[in-house]
Length: 340
Ligand code: SF4
View (spheres, protein in one colour):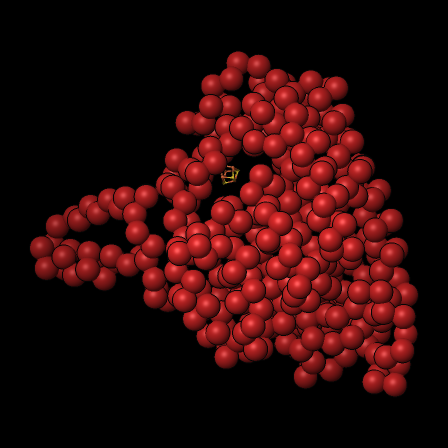
């Protein structure tokens, strides 16, 4: 992108094909224009690349080593978003909690500084790596109400041997200990995760460990993937690939467990008041507004268009598996039990 103008001019001048190969480990390019599709939720990249080399993943080979943007550039972008009316930002990186802004400035510093920006009401981040989730980051979340109480914590697999072959650098026990530590410091926290089913060599018993972690953590949201080979990765060269039908059976089992937990988890919202960032009108019904809770649940309710882009209190009166339904509270109804 940043070389496009220059290269186009070269082509126009020489009337010849131009090849320009960039170094994937190269510098961080700043000040490129960003096209944003959302009016109130903005994504802000804080770092590029990855150093982790999980054995199934192609990212480190195609995006190069980790390099972080300068904190002042990131904060400038967030301030600009706040000035344009954005209410929520998501800090993006392959491994956000190894962010290194230089001179000891870490991800926890960035979180704290981002929270100080007026106008931004909600801060999310994806993805942290469990092995790098420091106490300082937990403290930063704990101190700042603006930081979302749903934490995305990629599990990938629940069995320690499989995790080792995946090169994830944590065991089942360490993952569960981290979850417990976060829960003990941030009582209202919930988790979302990524899980890969059918990694090479995964046995039925080992897959049971994944189900065990799912039961224990009770994830609010699970992004489930059937393992698929990526040419150029160590896992692609492993000979003990799991047959497709076995992978699909395990996927269905995981999905069933997750589906059953969704309505149970939804029930705890019914009868509570949630702060909702109103995104716009519902796709299926023009007279209904839609937004999301802090924990990313879709909530539909009736209301005026002028509420779009605002954060409002909504009383949740029913749950419908993939969304919740609610009613806007009048100011004199604010004494309804607020669990969040
Ligand atoms: S899965 Fe994530 S942490 Fe692992 S190598 Fe890929 S991008 Fe890096």
